[in-house]
Amino acid sequence: MPTLGCNFICPYCFEKNKIDYFKINNKYFEALYNYSKAKMKQVKKIHFSLFGGEPLLLKEPLYSCLYKIKKEAVNEKVNFSISITTNGSLIDESDILHLEQLNCRSIQITFDGSIKSHDSSRIFKNGNKSFELLMKNINMLANNKGKIKNTKIVLRINILNNSLKEVEELLENVNKENRKHIHLLVRNVFNTDNFSEVNNSTANDLQNIQKEVLKMGFSMLNTATPFIYCEANSDTNTFHLLPDLSIWKCCSDLEDFDSCIGQMKYDGTIKFDAEKLIKWYNACNFNSNLHCLQCKNLPDCLGGCPKYNQKHGKRRCDKEYMLNYRYMERGR
Image (tube, rainbow, N blue to C red; front, side):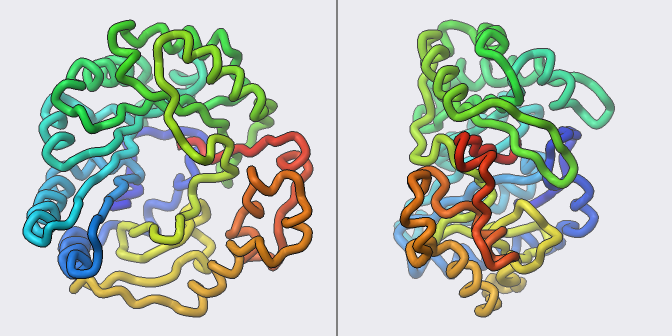
């Protein structure tokens, strides 16, 4: 996460008003390179998931750093790849070569439910609408699929009380010949500190939408967690590197520093806070909780939010989520 800055001002963004807390360190990319170079001696593969803010606001230094890291990976015979989560507004033809050369496994662009809701929520800071531009760019990516054969083009649809008809009308704007190259990811919008709306869309609604839009010629993104509660938490071998070089296991609440588990130094070494790290993994372990093990919803919720458990010492079993399967995630 090299920047929390963004040229959009989406109402549900959980990073809103946080950018001033995490301004980019002028040695961010130097530290990232040094860390990666050292890590090459220990691993067989390394993957960078580019997120933000909007990561492509920093195209020049970002690409420059990634090419240097890739060169080291080639020398050390380490498998190197990236993925990008972007709002899609800054993608152009020049990025195609970078996606190919940097072994980009996926690029995700998000749309909001319907054309009307998209152009009222995913808007530029100057108030301009974005639907037409983003649709043009995702069609451009699909048109160049021959050059980026290994890159999954992911069109994510945020659902906030949107009907199947609205979703279909949105997707009709994707050229028919391009649909076979595009993977869909349908997710609910989750409330944040800055955004509160009643979302009555359930997991069943998402399943129905997925089932019907497949008939339009799209593929569905294969994910092991289609109705995950939240995507802000990291897997065991993943962490978030924020612009100030702080390291977090969860970035959904950047005012809760219990999730900040360390700091990367300029030389690429990491100073971990062992106490916080152990506390985090203990919060993730639901196998020792008898209530969790007896719960019929366990395969879906995986014990609920680790951050909530870490912060409050108990698991959040909200009936709205657990009984009705309303596992909503933060819209990005």
